[in-house]
Image 1 (tube, one colour):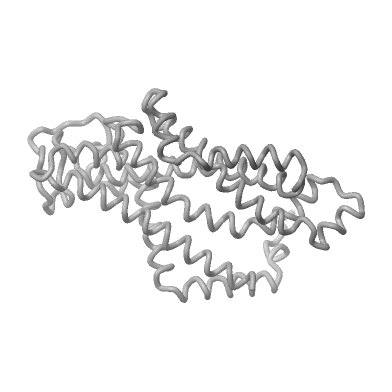
Image 2 (cartoon, one colour; image 1 turned 135 degrees about the vertical axis):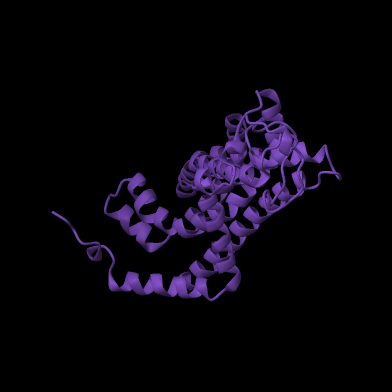
Length: 295
């Protein structure tokens, strides 16, 4: 039997969604961020269809078109192998977004769970162990730890994702811990304890819903930072390797031919900046829109 979706969306919920969207759409920068993210996402998903030269993403050469400057035929020019840079940037969005999605899918549940546990059992040995381990990871500069891990492993997209994941979860642990600690002695939590609710039920049914808005906002903002860290690892040769069209790798390879073939570096670098700026503007807009609901 089909259950209409209206059963789950109450009038109050509809009003809340409308108010949130109104607050979000009232900020022009938020709309710019949303459009930028949509452009990057759609370019990544439909790269085989939208790319003017889809064969340029892999092991393909055409030396007759090598090092061509930007033109109507190749808007972003070509590299030393004759591959279209615009097409490679579109496919490069795929790898950067894949890296961001996989990393956040690993670190958000891990960090949030540990932070909620430590916050609920604040003042106990569980809190001490979890948060001191978190402090140890936070004390080490993120990029230094990522470079050290990638240097020990074979350079690849998978290993770079593992390295970034290892250094990113403490931030979510800290965020969830601060929220759970502030809610630990609220009346709805104490009432759940009085009726004999299991601690895991209290953590995931009572405390976790109050953490979703700030966690989702941080996730949106962190996409840009994850892409930047991934591009940094690729730039120094510890991320995805040629012929994988990772944007950081494209910037690194093109830098060897500056300034004569400037387009090989400038356009991939602009693509990285465009992606990071878009997600940051979107994250700021979501944060402001959700803040009005909390008030």
